[in-house]
Length: 414
Image (cartoon, rainbow, N blue to C red; front, side):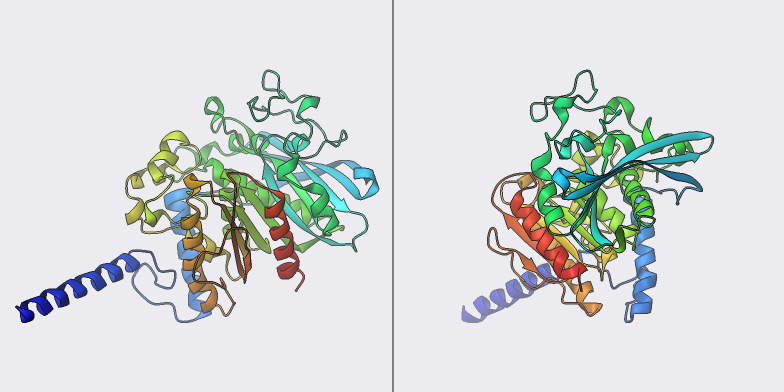
């Protein structure tokens, strides 16, 4: 009887250990080429990085155009006494012509007056229009469609009104950013590419590239937002008040997904900040928890390329996953933020991606993520990968910005 027991125990143990190994090996390895060859040097990683970028373009985000040949910047506002004198407010229209068509979007920029110029900057896309991030009456009201919701009940027939000024200020913390010595640049999502079902791919920059739509790897909306962030960087490189070598790209929720993809594609961004970007952002699909690929592709079919739809109900079987997006940012610093109450974003899955990405960051000789277990609530950890999970729900809070600014100072001021 004893021998049978030990035999059964041994077989169970082998089965259990094998299960764990198979589960781990199911998560795509950044250091293994698609043909099975192992990456052993930085030079090989650079080639593997290009392979991964192409995989994500083909299978998830779609193909984006390059920098436009016909693009110009119109600075239509330069107020050196904004925010009670603490900042210079600039407003810039980006004009783009392609294929006989035109598109434009505005960049709102606040530059601290007391900081030594050129200053580092943070750029991100906003949800309700540039006028919503601060009550400053000098901000131009967007001409694009604006939602009227319970959270933001300010638009009339889709048009921004003065009541829209500052309605989203709590998520942007402009004064804190300026006081920390950073410039802030922001663009409104609807001026870039519409998030409305009635206007998918019919407005903004999408009208410039119709040839990129009738294909499986079409130019998706998340990709368009990311692409516009790079056009924002194009402008910042021309602005003598901005240190273009120290620009962080920031995003929250769906716009956090765009920030990660922008950072993966455009190495000019010195740092990436993702706040509760969840599925298709920082969270690991292979966990099979939280918002899934089916929901992304049915509720938000414009966010990703058509090719991504073939992975519906195959979250745990993906040949790629979001830790690889973080790897594509390496060795540049990246900060991932979660909230306890945002279960749809799967905070544990966001941490899991950071933990997986740590392997590549350490391969590239950085300090990576400094912990192995998810930290306590409201406690930030900061290596080359930063992370925190705070109390509360889906939002951007003053606590979040405190951590982002500390991290930015630590990593951008080296």
